[in-house]
Image (cartoon, rainbow over all chains, first blue to last red; front, side):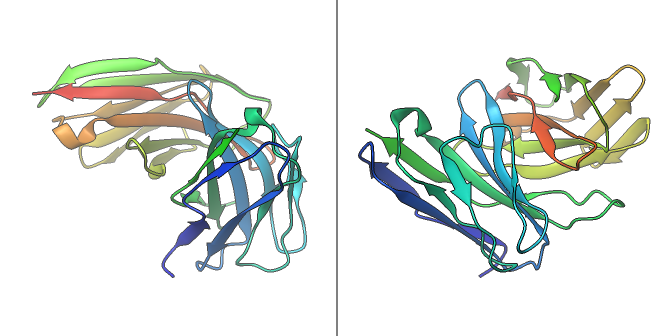
Length: 115
Length: 109
């Protein structure tokens, strides 16, 4: 693995089904993030984790949950998918800390369609 | 929260210069980022400004004025491969990023 990976690449899902999007990074970054990207709205933060064992809510957390059992993995779960969750989902990671740019590195994205 | 504004679209000719403006209102500020995103791909980091002034990286430069809540990304000697969306993002006091909707730049031959 080099960098940050996501799975699946794309998925079509029936409304009401449960779905977990996977994200793994091998850069030993402390912080990880989930965004959704919708046309005209840009990237919006769903949930984040500053370090393993902790998570926090972003701008649009409703209908989503996350866990951070270890440094490398940060899965995003849709408990009961709805059509409004149709979007492209990006996972990202970064070093944490108060100095330096600590820019976020993004995974390739998961294109999710809920019918 | 953050309010970040940037133009929706810009078109320029190969070899020209384009300036993408970004204005923001923030409840805390810990840096401004520019990302490039080609269609169907992930965003990639271009630049970071935390102090006022100009940061230059090859053909790309980014400027920040914290007092005015203003930044711009300058793309020089445009190439066809520069056709992409450019995302302005502000890091707040909690070290979370808020993104603008992005500016789609089209480079014409």
